Length: 191
Image 1 (spheres, rainbow, N blue to C red):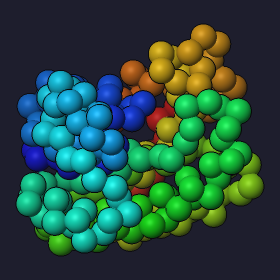
Image 2: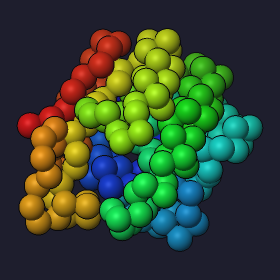
Image 3: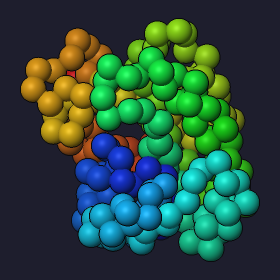
Image 4: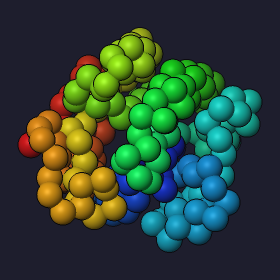
């Protein structure tokens, strides 16, 4: 299957991309940073340097790749967990506007499948952006993947796992690959 993976250079994307390639899929993977394009290539995907907010360019990139599936694995979070509260508005924006732009691009490309990252808890400040993201995905007929908090190398919880709901990030990637053919709905990926 041809998969357009938005967020290939992120915490789960870097684990997910090689698993998708190993399973025989052809992957185009996005990153916002030209500096991470080589990482995406090394993971086995065709790198696409793009910002999800550039709707026309995003649409053109997705249409040119002609995927059967579009996968949303985007967040706008800081490297330091202590800074998360300051990123609330930007992370909500990527869930709202980023999801809308990616769904529009998937529709324009004729993609029949859409999978999207969500969370298995209600964030501080409420879950409005989570619900809006999930509503958009379900309206498309897609699959919402509600992940527990990631832990393991490269996450906010490298040593001690967080309180539930949680999932080791490599296990989350493996379980995502198993859900590529899941019917439309919400799936929790937690321990």
